[in-house]
Length: 367
Ligand code: AMP
Image (cartoon, rainbow, N blue to C red; front, side, top):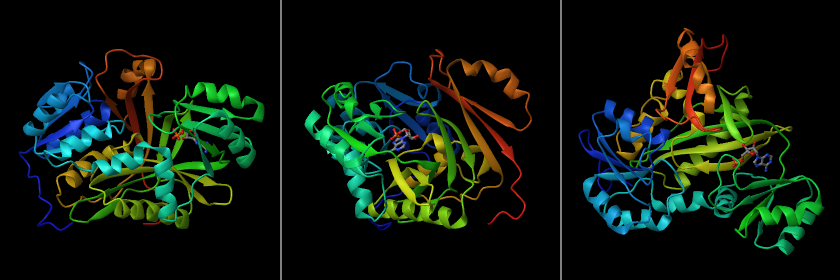
C-alpha cells in the first residue's frame, strides 16, 4: 500500500492497544518517547500497562459497546497479544484503522492455517496432521511416528495446551488432555538450536529485520535469549529471508516474531509466529539503535522504520515468579539492565521482569 492510501499517524495521536501485559507496557513507554498517547484495552483490572498509559478501558474483548467506544477514542488500533477474538478485531476494523490487519491475527491464531501459510511461502515446518478425534490422532501417530507433540490449534502459549507423546499407547490420554479442542499433531524436531527473528513492515512497504537470536526454553517458557545466535552466516541469512518473505506475504503492518528450529543438518524449520512484539526481542531495548517496541510503534503509525543495528552483544534472561527478588543484586551488576513490569503478585512461572546483560561485539564478527 502506498503512503497516499495508507495514512501516517503522527506523534501526538493516540494508539489503542488491545492487551495490557508487559508487551503493552513496554510499547506504551516506547510510544510515549515518540510523543504518542496510548489507550490500553484489557479485561483485567490491574493490567501492567495501565500504569504507563494515558487511558485505559477494562472490558471483555467481545464487548461490542466497549469496543466501539474504544475505536472512537483512538487513531489506530494494534494488539500486544494474539488471542483477541478475530471477530472483535474485524469489528474494530469497520470503525478505525487496525494494524496489523485482523486477517494476520486470524492466520497466526490457528496452528493449521499458520502451517499452511508457511508451506505456501516455501518455508519448512515440522511434519503435521490435523487431529479432530481419537481415531485421527491414532492415524496421525502411525503416520508421523513417535516422539511427537499434540497441540491445541488455538489459544496455546508457553507450552500450554501441549502434550508430548512418546508411545502410541498414550494416544487416548493425550487426546483427553485436549478436552475436545481441535488439535494438530507435530512430528518432534530433534533441534540443535531454537532461534527467532523479529521483522517489521510498515504500510508504506519498508521491511527491516533484527538480528537472529538464539533462545533457550525451560519448562516450555523462554528462559534466555542470546544475541546474536551462534549460527552460520548462511543460516542467519536464511532465517532472516523467511521472516522478510512472511512479512511481505502477509502484507504485515506492524511487527512479526517467528520462532524456528535449526535441526542437526542445519536446516531451518518454522515453529510458530506471533504478529506483535516478542519476549525474544526484549534484548533490543539495550543493544540496538531502535528497539522492537519503538519499531512496532513506527510500523503501526506508518513512520519510517528505524535502524536495527546492534551496537553490542546481549543476553536476556526472564525473571519468573520469585526470581524477581534478585532485583537489588542485579542492580549492582554494571553490565546488567533491569526491566520490571510492575506486577504485584510473583506467582510461579509468571513473567515479572527481565534482565539484559550487554557485552562487546566479538572481534571478526560478520557485519
Ligand atoms: P510452542 O508453543 O509451539 O512454541 O512450543 C513451545 C516449545 O516446545 C518450543 O519452543 C520447543 O522448545 C518445544 N516444541 C514445540 N514444538 C516442537 C516440535 N515439533 N519438536 C520439538 N520441540 C517442540
